[in-house]
Image (cartoon, rainbow, N blue to C red; front, side, top):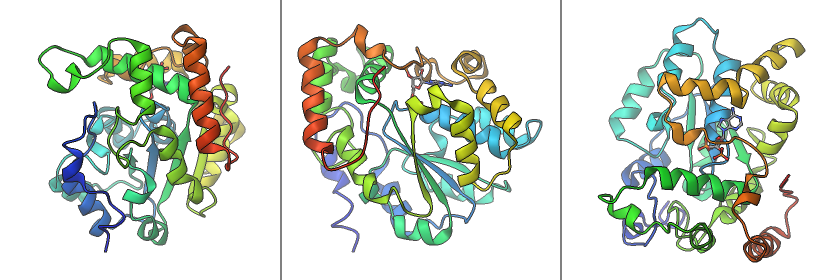
Length: 294
Ligand code: A3P
């Protein structure tokens, strides 16, 4: 019954995309078999929109700072807890975690997830949105830092930013959407769920501008009590400057670059910027999604 919803992952392997994120069997498994817990938190993002930051904020909100969970999630911040990566054994392990709340992640588009079952379980989903120009630059920098001549996938990776951005618009960078779809289609897939009782949309740029306020909203959504002072404290602890130091704790450097709004201006020419604006207009005209570029 899910075949019409989940695109055929095996065919995806044949597509000329640069990042193939996820294990097709596991996407099916998560859809058909996985039972979320009522207190699970799922951070859903398109890559490079602030995933790692949001997970860090949640970790600070949920766990006592001297707890084993807090320490452990520091190491657990890697790809391990994505719903679609790894193996089914990972789920067995996850089910054994005695933690009060699990912080999970996904880059899947909404149609690839069993949102009905997740909603019924009570698990909550946070969807982070970042302006697409900074997102593209962030992705480009990450891919560049990961490129090496022995990696076949990476050989398809354009070393010129303009080419990379055009490939991203054509949906050739990441395959967890339908063929040819891009970041905007990812947003569009989630958009109809923005008012679901267990879904919260959040903007990276709002987090940058008013971190304590956004964290307070988030806490409310997650049913976590936090004082104004506490929200400010977490905003400070998870600020870019403080977080970047965590590279020492084993978080790969690709996840921390400039952490700013507007870095795209150093990489975009006018034509490319207009090309993205046009795509935004065409794809998101019917929505109230508003990107912040400065
Ligand atoms: P830049 O490449 O623009 O610096 P993701 O975690 O989804 O891969 O997103 C990575 C982006 O989030 C990177 O953007 C990274 O620097 C930024 N980032 C990570 N931690 C952050 C923080 N605490 N505050 C602001 N931005 C952060």
